[in-house]
Length: 88
Figure 1 (tube, rainbow, N blue to C red):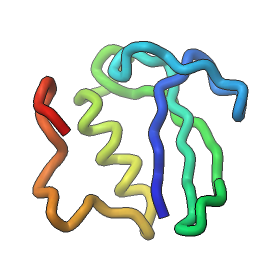
Figure 2 (cartoon, rainbow, N blue to C red):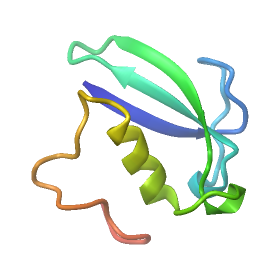
Figure 3 (cartoon, helix red, strand yellow):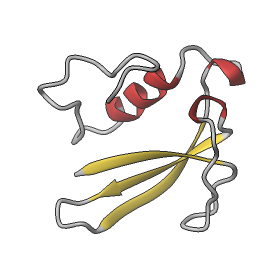
Figure 4 (spheres, rainbow, N blue to C red):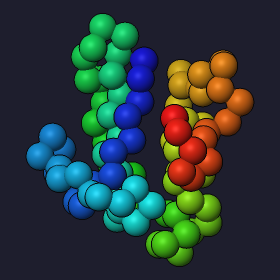
């Protein structure tokens, strides 16, 4: 399974418009895709990063979304998410 976290202006299911700044997006579209390519879940998550009164940046948002799903984890080869500006 793959989970995509997409910054959106306002969550409107598949009609959501992509927001240009991940850390300042008001909310995220969270898409779970099965191993055979089917969308199994499409939900929204409010941005609780530092720009919205929460703590942490994009790394903590993504880490929390992974932690919320018992079937997802970071790639075993990746020790952590890349730093800001570091190539992926």
